[in-house]
Image 1 (cartoon, rainbow, N blue to C red):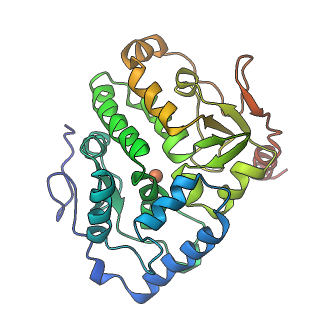
Image 2 (tube, protein in one colour):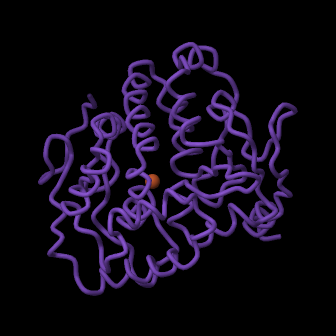
Image 3 (cartoon, rainbow, N blue to C red):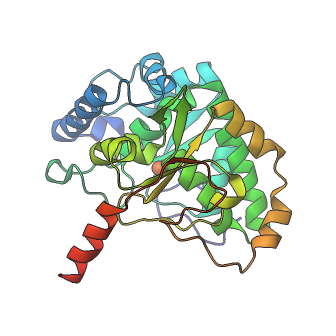
Length: 289
Ligand SMILES: [Fe+2]
């Protein structure tokens, strides 16, 4: 385990009490505003399992969810729980929770004047974005398998490699539904702007999921992604993750240069070749040109 100690007030596994009763009406109102905006926009754009999860977990109830209530419902559905943490936790702590079917969430919520700006994940991102799919048995298994894989990757010094799998699936994944694409990544579905951009904008690439390729791909932490990867189904994602022998891939890729965020390779399955117009415009404006 990590040598980092949990902050004062946190348990040895870094969890804290959510203190649900301490949320102010203004904080609940921020949740309700964000929830209403996403709930109005996502149907038809998000994978149906996400809407099913919101419903099954009764997340349509107003206000920031009480993690103990949410965990009771989630436990019944798939054996998962939601636990509060003070902020970002060390990788191995995070993996250990996932491997034990516990999803860690921040307890704080962004302020009303910063609805679209986040320095680190808040309870809306963590709970609205991530928790509905934990009610889906296949996705729930995938998250646990990822956590188990993370613990192994830590021993092999390959966390940075594996983290790209999480980034391009759990956070920014797209999924095929017939000939259409749908959203499922939490980083997308908890963001109003990216929920539109990821599906509709001509700028980003939308490429077929390829485990090894994706683990070499760089990613954007400061803006919308320049490439998204499309899985066939949660079953296929889980199966591929279970069947992949990661250690030889980590060894083979060790020290290899990354694939740039906008690159399309000759053997990529191309759903949409991005114009990268958005990224180019942003780069120009940053240069002041
Ligand atoms: Fe997240």
